[in-house]
Image (tube, rainbow, N blue to C red):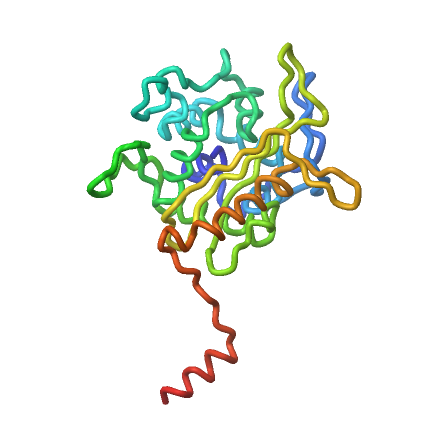
Length: 278
């Protein structure tokens, strides 16, 4: 979300080079990446590889004021706006101070807590051309367009980023033939009740939309302490847990939603098919 804000503000573009030297230090705080991605990445590759360090540097360029305003425009700072009596109590957990380090940690998914409805709403706005979406449990007679919260060009760039995450990034297990899935992974160490974080417990989330060339549905899948064992080793990040679950969900519900998989035709087959009609 911070990257979308930075692109929309003109602070960076998809080819801007970002420092990804890890670890990154800010006072007594240290920010790490899951892998060593080298000294720099393009903004596109920061998203594809899910670089915390790169995202934190982008947040520094954007600044906390613009970051907060962008998240507010997406509805992420207000109570859950759905027709439930419990909804007003579903307020995001926000930092008491929105300084530089808070802005940096928020940029890669720490430092604030929102509901899955908030996240799904934000992703809907990001992929639909940049108009605000207000969630509802009531059947609508037509699409209600909210205010423009980002440029259509920014939305198109973000759709491209999210698709690349699935094609060659941290969510390759989300590939479902014919369904053009796109999304972003998030893996956070689970907080302990009295402070600190567990070393072996992860909250893994995969959020995105499909089909990305014309988004119809957004999804948010979160697994609490999920893991996948491969060759005796437990993998807990979203790419191994929430992502394959999402792929199976889409594979099963896509036909029920009336979205038919689009079959890509190989070049040779296309030539032969065209020859039939000559």
